[in-house]
Length: 451
Image 1 (cartoon, rainbow, N blue to C red):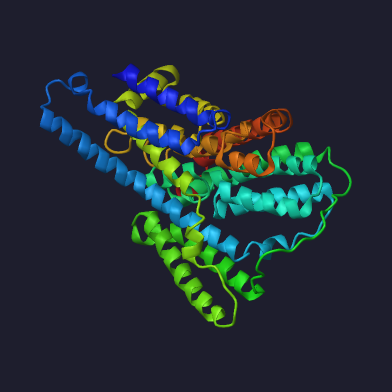
Image 2 (image 1 turned 90 degrees about the horizontal axis):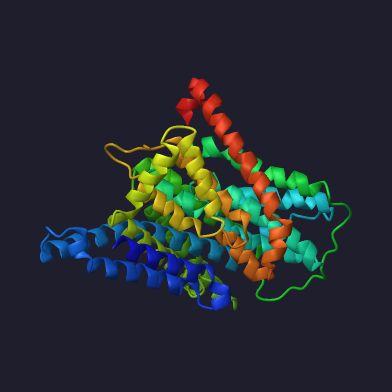
């Protein structure tokens, strides 16, 4: 049973990783992987537990399917709400409020502006959406394609680093936050500086080589012009809705997706009223309904398929066996668990970091007798490593894949120009995290209590 399920998982992952050469969308591979694993598992009755009756086995499978689907649905609905809010802001040209303020053409200054803006914007939104917005900005700022590639590479690094320290900034951090492994204040306090170092080190290295001015492309305005006051209103309400989510969770102790859907509902009602008002004046404005028509649904379904696949490996006990092997090799005390996280981070540059974090959550479940309890440094360092390790290769993160698709960046070019910079930032940030955890947070009582 174990060999069969692992083989199916590896083959499925191969097709996901080879999406572009095979020209088969990774969502289709993920959905097939998730459903096929559970289908094969249901026929492993006699191997898994021969003492269980046929009816009890089917009840066992059904119960775990419902339980794991519920956990997966929390993440899926959270992402659906977040993506709708962000896309609605884009449809109302809300991000122009930010991008129109950037006037510098100095290469080095622009690099710092773009990197810092991406870093903090990614913490509020998510790294993939931020990368898309920033690449759209770069097209308005930089005419030369190869120069734009360099800045786009730094956008990937900054977006992944910025998303790692925020409970709503990166899918993997969202998973840990929703799963209860980390809390809002703790994840920010423990990983912010390490993530900042991960972004700053590559910027310092590459900034030392940049000189001169950027040549901007000619202005070209197309499409419907949204009134400035509406752009500002939707941007403010959208970001407020996103920031409200962790506040909602802290106050109510309800799942974060409810706070996200509540924020979406408020913005939805507002845009419906605005659209109706301005339609009488001859202007057609976007609404949440029109926005949902071009939401990135395949990405949502990809997460559904991959998380259900990982849940099958968890229920079958395969992840537990893997955890035992890692524990035997590295141990569960520092510095052993730091090495486990570092390995997961490097692996996330080859395969998607979502299933790696999901697998880690399955390998080390919370509850009585948990190896790593809530807010253990293992989870915080996992958020950092999984979030930033994907920058090592352009296919290692959602932000990288999005930028690669938009700018047609070559895999080998990224490997030569950006990967070593990403590795330098990854290692530097990891060292900072470990030193702070071992020294500062352990020695300063008030800081430890805050975290």
